[in-house]
Image 1 (cartoon, helix red, strand yellow):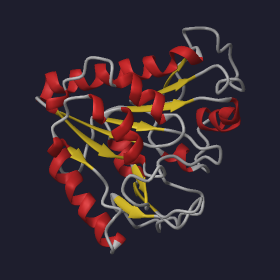
Image 2 (cartoon, one colour; image 1 turned 180 degrees about the vertical axis):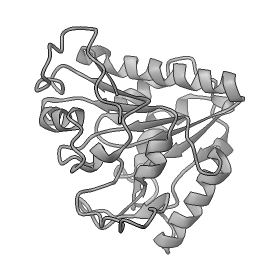
Image 3 (tube, helix red, strand yellow; image 1 turned 30 degrees about the vertical axis):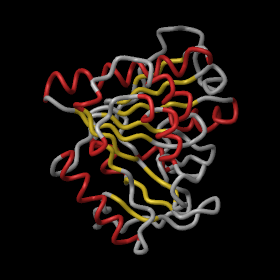
Length: 245
């Protein structure tokens, strides 16, 4: 895992430039690219910055990491933020947006359908070019929340699952194997409230769900407040690379 600490006022632009460069490289290598975006409190500024940088949108398929079960257009929907902050401003073909079908009456069937979409867009097994992740103060990422039932040791988790109610909403979410297979993961984290859990993520604490995502091919992008409890000088631009298991 690589780690960068960036002044708060430049964090969103740094993240946007990283996403853009990763997607341009994927398009150059394979003719198209796939990216999955998370929601959360930090997503809006990142997506707004991404709308202003050079991305070959006609060659890209956009998916969701997770989504709350809420009516279309509701502010709780991650898609609402994604649409308002990014997709309304870029030339992404309409059929290149693959929204999680949380309006479905049968959520289990919706999860199966989205897993099929993943395979259609990103191959078998689904391998996304870039996954954007946030980090909750309780150690969750995507909607892999603390009270999520763990699969049995001999069970391979489904690519997409329905979660229990968390903070008032059920959700659909990609699971750890899909996140870990991504060619690149961008962790985008800001704010002092995240500092303790950032330290646990950096320390490789697998008791938090975020800590179960593969650490290689990932960049942890932080502002100074989120990096405040790390055991090195976070003002140093050359922050160390940390364990990549």
